[in-house]
Image 1: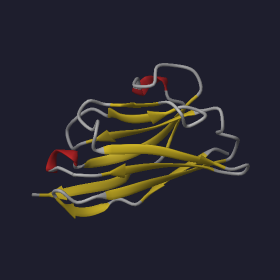
Image 2 (image 1 turned 180 degrees about the vertical axis):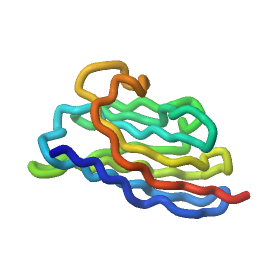
Image 3 (image 1 turned 60 degrees about the vertical axis):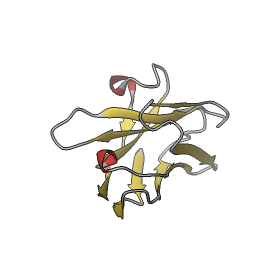
Image 4 (image 1 turned 30 degrees about the vertical axis):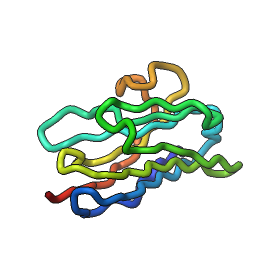
Amino acid sequence: QVHLVESGGGLVQAGESLTLSCAASGRTFTMDIMAWFRQAAGKEREFVAAIGWNGATTEYADYVKGRFVISRDDAESESRVYLRMNGLKPEDTAIYYCASLQVGTWSNVHDYDNWGQGTQVTVSS
């Protein structure tokens, strides 16, 4: 059974940094696109960042470009995806979700096959 489990969320002040982690298990995720999405209260889930199967290709939403960095570490039994978030702003407050994709558009929430339960990030001003 596939599991994606996020961790690392919390409450920080504006300007501070936070690193989220996602552990993907249950099958091999080496060839999957892995991504982070977020959903603020009362808003739709939106794309944050994605990383290709070899880690060499990444894509970021404009509103996090230059502040967030996505990375991955693939092992035989588990893949991990990280999101380093620097210069956090109050508008970054949301539940952050990890997701995996085999075929589709990287930024399209509807193309993703598996999702984690999310981790809350709150940025105070």
